Length: 216
Image (tube, rainbow, N blue to C red; front, side):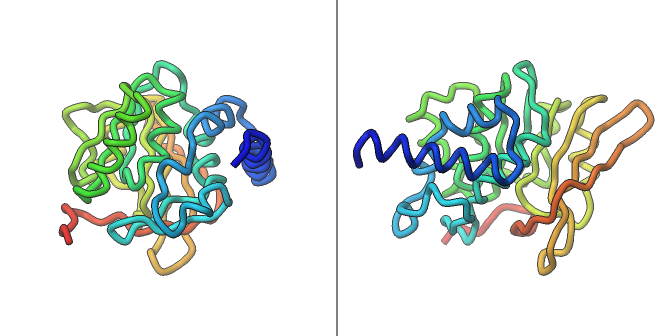
């Protein structure tokens, strides 16, 4: 692929993001820097720059770029923030967050996904990302509180254990709804008095599952 081809593909990629409502310049800049192609292997690597979800190992998916962009935009990450991501998956979302936050902790229940993502983070020299094998539904109490929490799997309700790990003024973005129905992307802001909820968009994610994944 020539440099012109790469430039054209990148321009089309960013245009697709803007057309779906991703307008925050910091988010667009982060997504321009992070090559989605590094996170997709095998048969689907040719489709890495299309705005569609794709299957990855362990029965999981890499979200479509516009959804990654909209979730990142809704999180309103600032350069001093400490962010928790629940559901590392391919590592793509965490890599995007790494361009925006001071520190990113990402947790996944599948050992293979954590290992593969860690290799990519090291190859990209993303020294501000820590990937952890664990039950993401429990969060990371030892590192709490967090300025921002992003959940990349659907819960029936915003998980109380994760809400409790938000700072006052912190934001969590989470898909909410039954796994076999269309879900809603929710933004939760923790206030002095409780939590404020905003419904953002319809989405479809794999369900948030407790415990560690069985290794094939």
